[in-house]
Length: 189
Image (cartoon, rainbow, N blue to C red; front, side, top):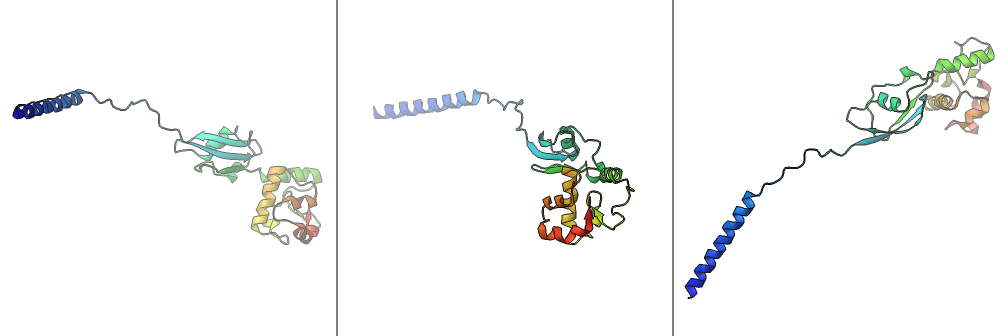
């Protein structure tokens, strides 16, 4: 009797194993859906300066975004934009700041019209340097001004327009009262 129970238990166990194998082997495993879209990568860049709509722009990153894509998303450049001062083919990265500068010649023309002088000169007959028209090399001739501050002066006037007075140059980061006093007698607007 005991042998019959052991044999019966063995036969039932074998039947359960064979049935389980049969059930699981005949079930089809569904392949993953093909229409699942990969997560979209987006980058955000800040576009400022001579574009029609300066703003933080969010772009879908396909891996081949260029500076021109961000400028176009900001409405494109204005007619005052200095297209030769920036590399429109530069690859974009998240968090990048793109500043489209103003044509330097634009400021020279305005200053020349206002003063009635020759637009090719950055200093007047008194030898003063016009901070609205001078290029970086001219600005570096001023006491206390190196390449970094000269660049900030140009960036300030591109972003805010021409200086209205020589005192306004103190709004440029890095030019305090002491630096202004050193250059006061060398500059004009």
